[in-house]
Amino acid sequence: MTIEIAATTRKVQGTGASRRLRKANLVPGIVYGTGDAAMIELDHNTLYYALRKEAFHASVLTLELDGKKESVLLRDFQMHPFRQQVQHVDFQRVDANKKIHMKVPLHFINADIAPGVKTSGGIISHVLNEMDIACLPADLPTAIEVDLIALDLGHSIHVSDIKMPKGVEVAGHHHATDAVATVQVPRGAVEAAADAAAAAAASAASTAAAAPAAKPAAKK
Image 1 (tube, one colour):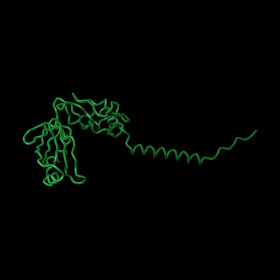
Image 2 (cartoon, helix red, strand yellow):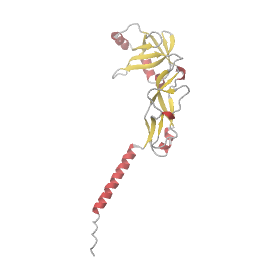
Image 3 (cartoon, helix red, strand yellow):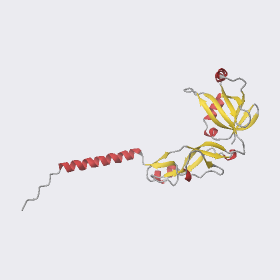
Image 4 (cartoon, one colour):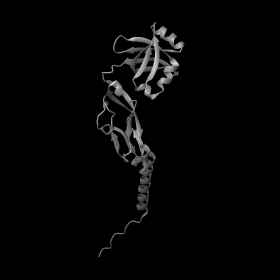
């Protein structure tokens, strides 16, 4: 499904102009990439609710600027320090024939039936929640699935174990041996076992201290 968002060319620039736009419930922004950079403005509420959708951050978007459509990626946005207000947004034009680099969210599946969870009572610990990838715009996935169905207690699934979609490759700082998720013993169980071991050791020490000392053997 194509995600579309509309914008108009911003005719005035500067801090004062941006402040007036925000008071008018508009967001200043920029579109850069192939060709000249374009200063734009967008409806705040439309953009704000779009930013709350995961797919908006990892999809090729259709930006309608002054009635003309072009393909872009969301590259950055700034929020007000304490208000629910978008301060600025950056989009980058995409070339259908050039690879793009993006951070894509990871979706973990079958966690509840993984042996380490269902049989051994472990919990899933997510080491990564997103991954850097490279691909052509047409191959960009909105998310990458990580199947945990075979994960045992104390084991991890690594970057090399993830089945990447067609045309998509791992990029950025990731290494094949990097852990993506692990199944760990719940912290409470670890602490309970440690407490039980400490109590057993203390009991053994107390019993040893209370036992009468052995009499030396009589000399013949």
